[in-house]
Length: 531
Image 1 (tube, rainbow, N blue to C red):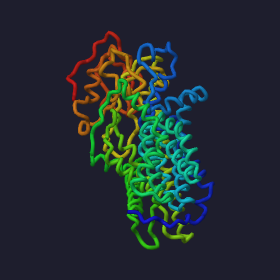
Image 2: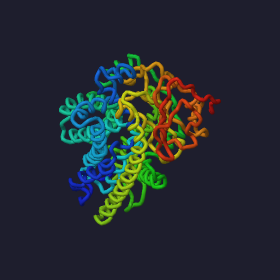
Image 3: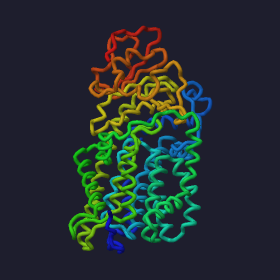
Image 4: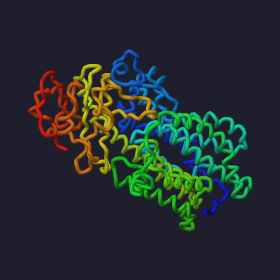
């Protein structure tokens, strides 16, 4: 299918200098400098878990509200890393520094892969830079994107050692490397395995001259050093791991996830950019295009792209109870394809122009993310001002007024309530629970049915999940004796409860957001809940 590109390394230029990789990595940090807490959708929910994890055994967080049991599983990246980081910098700054590591590590992984495959960075390599802020990162799948950053750098090392003929050393090194990537997140370990297998197939064919069948089984044999985590997965899955694997071949969702690979706040630009990149990858895969202006695809990453496409098509939306499994892979499918591209032209002026356009596009993304993160963070901190009026170790029932998921822009407030755990060591509803698949569980029985995720999420009726509650019905039905406060996050004034003597308004955020203290021994005003 591929017409192999000429065995010549791409022409040199300013984009092939070592400082170019360092420059892209450094500027990728800029959007995360100003926000006190990186405004990623799920991150604050994870931070609530980290606070429980780091709490003293005598803390009410562990004695009354939550249980935290360590277990060996492929989803422990930041949960482990935050232990030393919190001791050095505190929880919030420690998390921020870890998150700030992810974009530059992702970029170095991408660009080192490109340099290994091409022998020198092609002018198109910079087009991959926006994927450092891909949708899984924006969503706050922090263990996954950290593990993917490690996996990408590990794959670059895999290619380097193969090029140097150090296959035996590679086999020794990748036993612990594979285990570490799996420990950070099992999905990333799976992607690393697919990339390594793809590269070995091509190496067997192009370097050692093996036949197709022999290349397949020898490629699999060379990937055995990555296999030990399979034993760890068997141990993990043999425990009390519940959660379904479902929603196969949801084509509409897969299309949305693919075009959302670079989803932020600017829909037209996001879709235009990822569509252009997908088109370029398709041109490369088919080895089609104009004779002098088109692009080619290096076989190593061309095969890897095809393998990832197959994995994306076959992967269900929900894996072991973890939603958005295929969505997490989508940006990396496109990114690996972009890395395999090399312009056919050798004209240095044209190549310089391509590299300059790639750099300009990333500059726009960095500027956009910087402004966006600053604005979202400022609004989040405005809502978090309610916590100044909350007693330590209190019990809070939080409701977040959110738009439909179909809306391109996200206010990123789904798990803002978890900051009450972080800053006030309070109990608040909204933590994820899944036996055997989460380290944290909720043991506060009085809040049963009003404690877990997504009891805090309130969406408009037109896009609400079946049998889910509205703000009004949640306020009417939640157990008052189980909580000390009702916290309405981002709720407009027309959603605030009135004429309810059991709720005393003690803080309001202007037109959005309110905090109520629940009055003991005062019966609530009863009305028919609105569904």
